[in-house]
Length: 368
Image (cartoon, rainbow, N blue to C red; front, side, top):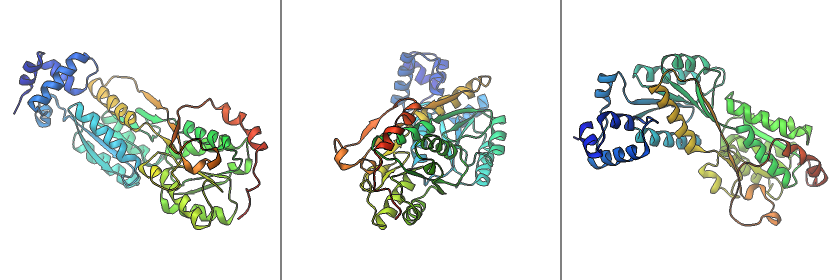
């Protein structure tokens, strides 16, 4: 088995440089990092976490707790985290909270008992998760990813308000004037942020739409049920969904009621999961930067492990709008592929479009 001395000799650097390079330290020069990684790969060098723990009281492991691995969003983030940790010579302990703050607290306690060097967590609930996350953050470096609670820790998240704004700007551009928002009754920070953005953006256009909010869970079944409720009450011109699972259910539910998308009702999702590209019609949705989300979480947790005195940091990444068939009238569609609107304009764009959109209000908005 190759040793750190073997890697140092092969790379032509000191063992200290090898250690810094494999730990992900940002102070390592790019050419040194490349030589060390090449040498480690050729020699099939593996970090011995037990030996590291005995020498430096570190295990070279990071724990991660996610709310629900069934949700397609989280496996993608986990994959980015694991890949970034692997390249830093560290291992991942992954835990599923089963969408339960109580289970989440147990998982965090178990990771602390394993003496992980740091934790990456996406809190289940903005209120009930706070105590357990705060307790962990007081003991070891902790980074909140995507979701968050009010705790003094590093945070990497996406500007979800901007994502909803991009959706509504697109729908208004398509001539939609009445809306509904289908979301979760859960109290995660991202659910609240998306709902607040929806209300803020549609209120100047149609006050009734601002209160047309259906809350259940983040599932296809709930989307199906929400679509049936809308069809039995008042069907708006566009249904904005808090994630792709709900949107797929809405498409199914509308179809079951004889309502076509996008001809009768535009439908949008959020996350750009694999489902968005295979459902019919293909789903307009918001793409989150999952790779950078995981990579930045790893960068922050490693730097906090190496330099415990660093000030707390918060990163907000920008989402993209992916326009597909579910929200675009066939006559307006310029091509059969997906278009990506990256950043759009500022918050005033939605409001500036409202008077034009009202002038184009279509007669098909009706009670069904």
